[in-house]
Image (cartoon, rainbow, N blue to C red; front, side):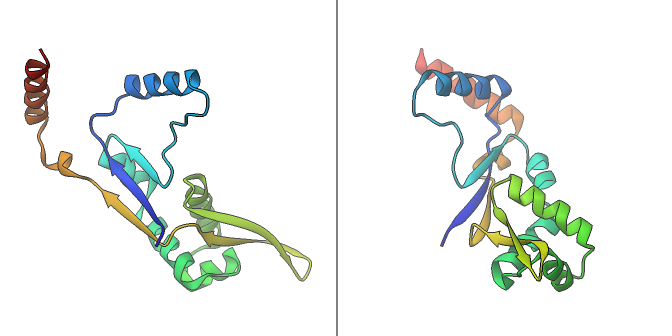
Length: 145
């Protein structure tokens, strides 16, 4: 079973991402893109990119295997323009593929799920307060000295 994971990591920062990028650029063959997952610093960012509508859309594609976006919109009883917008977002995340095909001389897009399921991994960091995390960092620095 192939799984795509949305991960929460409150310790990542823009500076850390920039340092990772510099390391990737300096190391031939190294990649910073983690396959099969997206990591974010906030739950809000995760829930903004993967809405309930997009999650429903993904599971419909994975289960029903519709032959076109029109068919997908009919199954979900949704507006075709909204379905197109959400499938483009899922494709940009690498969760689905939109395969261009022709049927009876008409162009259409066939949505294909690249994963069997989606998992949200909020880990233990969600339960920790900012004060607790700050205390942990201070203690780690003391131990490292």
